[in-house]
Each structure stands twice: as structure tokens, then as C-alpha cells.
Image 1 (tube, rainbow, N blue to C red):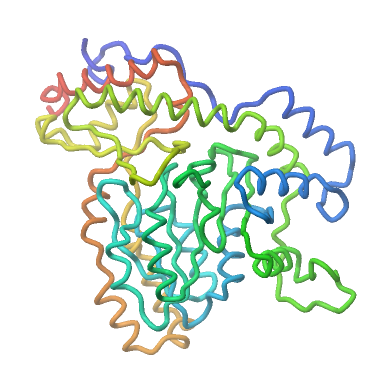
Image 2 (tube, helix red, strand yellow; image 1 turned 180 degrees about the vertical axis):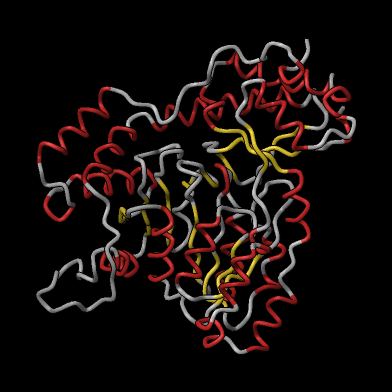
Length: 411
């Protein structure tokens, strides 16, 4: 059959499940928080209940809920004392919040090239980026995948640098049976409305370390000491990153079905991967051998236009979306965003970093593998994986139709 872009009927029959999903329990818990009128976490225990539940789910000792994932990264960097003059290692293939959190601390973001197969930070490119000024490495567990934590932790320990896991896209994904976010010094999460555990906005920091827990807790609560409150004065720097009781109530409801939903997506992702083996030109992102579970916030894929007769990725995506499959091109190179140069040329960075250091920075700010990845990467919305097995087959059928009519689509 013809692709929908050429006038055919869309391959996907019926819409995929809408996200976020709302059930009776969500309404009950939200309305309970509303009626209690203690809407700030200072006056009730709903957020504390969620923090305890999330820490237990991840196998960590401590959790601090925050207003969003970006600020969980900000709080984590504060806790590990990454700030002006320091360097923080990050991948160039991620959402801009990872970079913004570093710039918010007036540290220098240093980009480690990507692994073309997994879309994650490549540890083999990491050690060459470490200097005497490196304070922290922030691997991003992209799309439900998990970075090679064995290699990253080994290098970090060797050079005595902190590890802050950006797990904002990988709730309940696992590395050798341990949950993403629980392996480094601090793990950070987002509960934004598109995430697999949503509450509109929201985030969290988790850690095994009591000292970091104390610092993050104080920082997110205007500097109040967790134990003494303000009885001894404000002994910490701080800001207000407190999660509201409404958000925590929604998260407690959403949490009751998170594992079941993650399992459903993972099963559908494996099935789709089997179907795509029969269609050269589109292949799912790989996973490191140590990854034992993938919650698939994104279904990440490579696109090779040659088996599609030279059909551009942009035209392929246009045709696939017309078939009813929400899919889009991946990230652009974060190390080449124009605002980064503007920021590093600002009077603040000019005061903090010597000219020769910034000159060397730009001379070494290249990630050639990531440039290639940005040209071939694609993301499918996780709602597609929440569909039926029949709809997964229809996704593969949509791609077959596009390939069969690639020359017509090029015209």
C-alpha cells in the first residue's frame, strides 16, 4: 500500500495511548492534598512520603524532591562543590538542561564524545578530557538507556572526581541489576509531564551519602539545616527548590503503576527490535552489556538513507509521522549551540577563566562521532511503546511502506 504521505491510509490503526495517563487514584490523591490545605511541604508529609518511596524503589538511602529535573542537577552540582573555575564532563548528545545546570554554577562544560551505537557518553573518550580542574563527570542515561557505569566509575575513582548521574530519562532502568541514579555520588531525575513518571514538573536527587543528602536538603530549602532548622542560624547557602504537596500526591499515584508500564514498554521495544531486523536502514540504538533493564522513555534509532534509496531523514520522518507514528530527529550538537559561545564570552566567564584557557577550550571542543550521530539519530515517543502488539507490527509496516515507495517520496 502507498504511504499516507502519498495518499494512502495510515498504517497505524487508532491512536496510541495518551500521556500522561490519569486514573481514579490520581484524582483521589490530588484532591486529598488539596483538601488538607497544607500545600507546602513545610506543613505536611506527602512529599516526605514520596521521597521515602522513591529512595526505596531505587535502593538508595536518601531522596530530596525538587521543583524539576533541571534544578535537581543544579542542586547536585552544588552538593559536590562544582563551581567557578571547575570543569564538568558531559556528553554533547542530550537535552540542554544538562548544560544549563553547569553554566548556572559558572563551571566550564567539557564535552566527551558519544558512542555511536548506544547514543551514550563514550568512556573511551573521557580520560583525555580530564584535567587538574575537572571536578565532576555527569553521564546522561539517555532515553532509558544507561551509560557504561563500570568504566565511568573506574575512571572517576582513579582521578578522584565526583559522579552525578543525569537519570532524568531513565526511571527504573538498570545497570547489572542496580537502578540508574543509584550508582554515582548523586542521581538526578525529572518528573516533567512527558516522563515515564510524571507530575507536570518536578524532580529529585538521590544519594547514598549522608553528607550530600544534608547539603542538598538544605540547599533546596533556603539553606535550613535538615536537623537544626534555623535554631543555629542559616549555616548553608540555599534557594527554594521545594516540590509542592500536589506534585508529590500525583507521583505517589503514578508510582503504583510505573513498574508495570516500564515492563510493557520494554516488551514492545524488544518485539519492535526483532521486526526492524528485517528492514535494513532503520535499527534501534544498542545497549551496553551491563544494562539489564531499559524503561524506554525514548525508542532511539539510527537511520541510514542508502537502503532507502537516498531518502533524507527529514522526509522519512515526515512520512512516518503521517502514518501515525510520533517520531522526530534526535538532538543537535550541544557543544555547538550558539548560546554557549555567548555565555563563555560574557563578562562573568571572562573574569573567571584566563583567555588562554578559553582559547584551548574552543580548540578542543570537537566531538566528531557525535556530529555523525546527530545526522542519523531518531527518537520515537514512548507512547508508541504503550500501544498494543498489533500497533507495534503496524509501526514496522509503516516503515516498510515508506521504504517500498522511497523513490516516489523523494520526487
